[in-house]
Amino acid sequence: MYKKIFFILIVIASFKVSIAQDVEQYIDSAEIYYTNSNYDKAIEMYKKVLAAGKESGFLYYNLGNAYYKNNKITDAILNYERAKLFIPNNKDLLFNLDMANRNITDKIEAVPEFFIITWWKTFIGIFTSDTWAIISMASFVLLLSSVFLFFFTRTYSLKKTSFWFGIILLFLSFSSFIFSGKTKDAITKHNTAIVFEPVINVKSSPGDVGTELFVIHEGTKVTITQRSGDWIEIKLANGNKGWVKSDLVEII
Image (cartoon, rainbow, N blue to C red; front, side):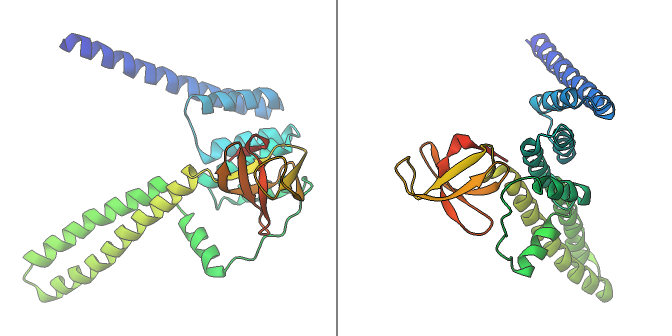
């Protein structure tokens, strides 16, 4: 019985090592192909990495660059936006995304955002979800040390210091935990999409009989607000809303 379990564990470990080696090989090959301007092969290799379950901001960023170099602007925007979920404040990414968006038809002015909300999003985006989680756990461990020191020290100044230090650590641990959840939620929510049809007539209701409200074009980013069968309600950056078929967009 134990031999069978041990054998299964060995097989699983070997399989994981094999996948990891394949992923590294795909990444190395993709970088070589990209350097040699063979963008089709670079895209193929990056897709194999994603298919193997490897996902990161810089992987999507590099895939977006390969698409952009291959003049596939909509695919580039999609992958830049996916990269932005992981590395929202990366300056190179934001610059490349802006350059790609200059090539699409729709130039939609976003509704101005309250500066505190903008500051909040920027601050949370400083670290990844995993990093915020590590900060939260580390702060909690230090908090326990402060609590221990507060109850067992006889020195008044040290007791006072440990008390206020513990308050700060409690706030840091709790807030970091919230930030980790918010960052993770942004990645897993999947409520934004990129239009992949040259032209879409946006309807007033879900169905072909709905009144045509406005037109959007390929490469435009939309927010999904609700679903009804094969239709989704979308919202543009300027606040305009309407319904389109779900298969006409690609989820970020």
